[in-house]
Image (cartoon, rainbow, N blue to C red; front, top):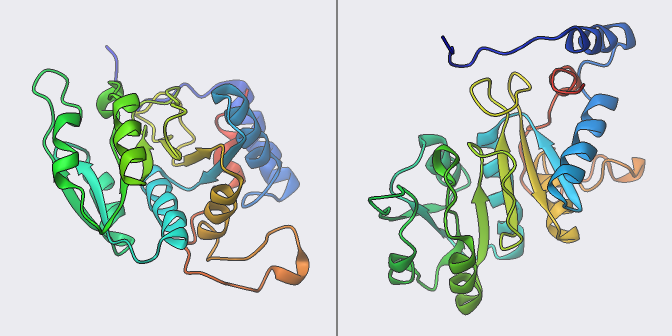
Length: 236
């Protein structure tokens, strides 16, 4: 029998967790940095920004986009998706605009997207539901025609990364492909968006590296950082 959300806890995982305890680094620490670097390399992207779960990954991505276009208030999402996807839109003070899904794939119906675009649309946010792959090339063409961002929710499809999206998001919940217990990741090739995401995951802090800017908060943000002890659970 295959059980849902049952993880294989290896000896290396146990050693990593013990190392966190021995080093007194259960919050921020070296395992988080290593995990971000390995995800970025695996997916072939410039930036991987770790967060505490997949829902926060979506919220941080949207919050980062809002810093670029604060006047926009709507996000196009599929009508069939996990509730966290839609919650992330609402919790970032945006309005979800639902588009029906295709009957055979259960992915967002690309032919219906343009009908829902308005002057208030910030982004198209499809989901690769249950690991199935939506038509990102067609979605990107629509987004380009209307000057929209694309956030690809791949929380249930780690490994998928489309160059068509401005952000891709992932979840490392125990029932997903790999797990950190609880955790998530945002990836992008855009330097400015990556910095906006790093700020949004940490209370809107201007900089983590510059000590003089650690207590400058230019935007609203979340307490959404990944813990070192979570990252330690996934590294071999």
